[in-house]
Length: 178
Image (cartoon, rainbow, N blue to C red; front, side, top):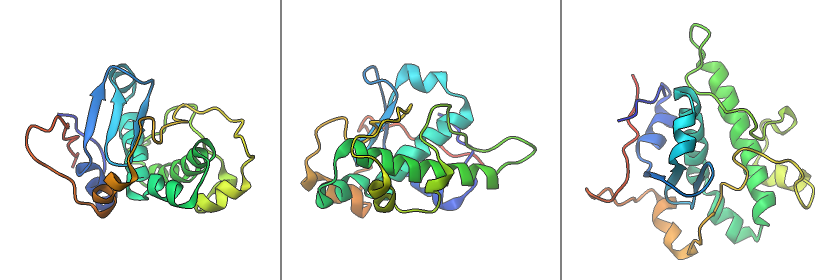
């Protein structure tokens, strides 16, 4: 059981209720709007704080309904993914700064994520409008939205927070730190 150092009740609740799977395919981590998947080797390469940061990043895509919003608004997937990554990473960076104790943050973002101060405090829609048609920036987690085909009708339960927590569903309880 992985112990995550999330002291914020809001973020901790989101992470605790997430279904997380560790798989052998893919390069990093991603979400389909319902669950979070990590490539096993990638997850093992992260520090505890980076793992918490990446997990929080993916869970926030779910909490903010980024995939349903992308689909309902007809957004281009790569551009939308970059816009949402900028927004989420800025929030995680601020959270990391606020929770820094004894010079060590509770969460951290791995090097190479999309993070620019100029997008701070903006909505994904605002950032989307400011980005070039085809994003030129490459990112460690770029492309983490909808790597697998998603049926928009199946997203309702995830968006509404009604997740099947049945035993034996293959999900890993990420655990929470004190």
